[in-house]
Length: 257
Image (cartoon, rainbow, N blue to C red; front, side, top):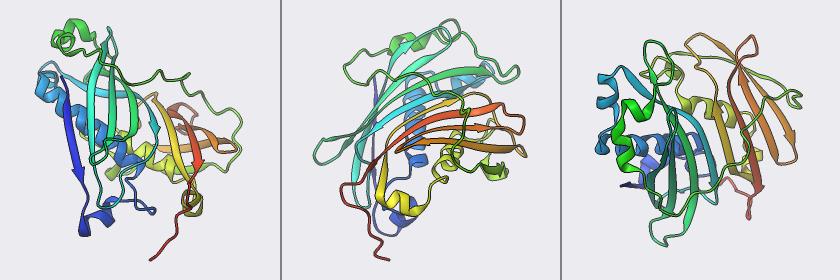
């Protein structure tokens, strides 16, 4: 079982939905993965309405993406998702993004999700609490095997970015929205860097929730076009860790505005 979602960007709406290079921003890609997963879960009987009855909510634990290209202005894409595996505490969900006209694969992603009890903030047993999940497992070919999880940054090479979370960073679960972490990571590099390079892979692991008013510190260790990133609180406890790999653009982006 799967949900297919197609997205078209046209006219005025395009400018506000794209980044400085006319592409879908990385945080918007993560948001599309979350929204598509949400739609699939709702239609399959294990979405928000089902979980909230049991005092639970889905939480994205890890996302690993391999990116050949991202949608640009006035283009369309198809995003498909399916559940590959359901463990006791974690479920694996795969994604594939294709160009709507040519069918070319643009992006593949592997994500891991858990359901947390909203009172204890602890994971619940998925197989026991939501047995319907086992009925939608799809072992279709596709996806990839993610590498080792990102690790803490022990020796930063770049200046530390400091940010205090605000009201606009918070979602319904009363914690910082997953996409905000991605924005903070992306903002570490300047426009000239992205004009010359693009993200080819992202591996992001969420460690613990960030709340309104907390201060964060972004630690980055860079080796060429590969970077390790850790976002921590003031005491050094990690909110998330990430690995990014950039590649040079075939044609550097030129600003025509």
